Amino acid sequence: MRLVHTTVLVLLCVLSSQCSIRTMAIREVTDLVTDGVPAFERDDDLELVGNALPANIKLLEAMLESDPRNAKLLALLSQMYASYSFGFVEPALDQANIPNEDAVKTRVNRLYLRGIAYGERALILAAGACEKTIKVATQVDACFEAIDRDSVPALFWYGFNLAAYINRNLDNVGALGQGVFIEKAMQRVIALDEKYMFGSAHLLLMAYFGSRPPMMGGSAEKAKDHYDRIKELSKGAFKLADVYYARYVMVQQNNRASFEKLLKPLVNDKAESAGEAAGLRLYNAMAKSRAELYLKSIDEYF
Image 1 (cartoon, rainbow, N blue to C red):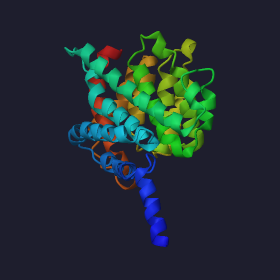
Image 2: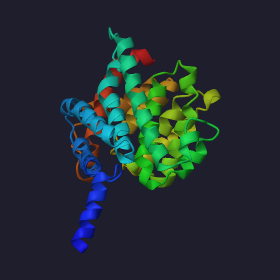
Image 3: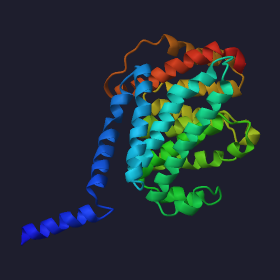
């Protein structure tokens, strides 16, 4: 009788759209890919990682077609789009006199918008309050407050994509008006899991406050506080903090000397990240590459 009961349950599982073998397989693969992300983060070969990410993104999108309500998969896609665009597509825009600048900017915007959309979908699945409030500045608090610790990745990467999109569209009033979403999202990430991604919520808030003049909500003091905090959390190992501080805070303050002082050591840094900091190898390689680009284009900023 027990065998018959078990067989019936299995059959019902197979027939059910929410408990299909395909869905279970997709969720197993999603967990495997999520667990495998550190393998990317420990690799400082930017060319290798950059070439691998697009295929992984398309694989995940193919999986999503069969499991569109997989919040973990949606959050992972938001992360993949953010990482790929920031690390491997956007840097072209930091070079001087690139011939296809408009086309590259259009592609960067498109990638970040996809990352935002996937993040939004994950957050809506995580909290019903988000469905009607996530796009409304005066109501979005209800969405973010309903998010719990399990959905921190979705919230963070949603905010990262949005922040990156805004930073590339500072001449767009509509984009600038979305800055409040970044501030509130990252404050919620800090409240839930301040150490997520080595404290990167502070990284985004540092850029948010440091890149704007006071009349637009900028604050050099708040930017410095977030910079100091991420340095503390990562024990100084997260080099993107220095890159962001130079690019967004020192440029806003027109402080060329401090800009160079922060970036030049990164270009010459040959230290190998080990132990806990090994998970920063990819991001520190990005920091070194971006520092080189910024120094070459220094006259564009000052």
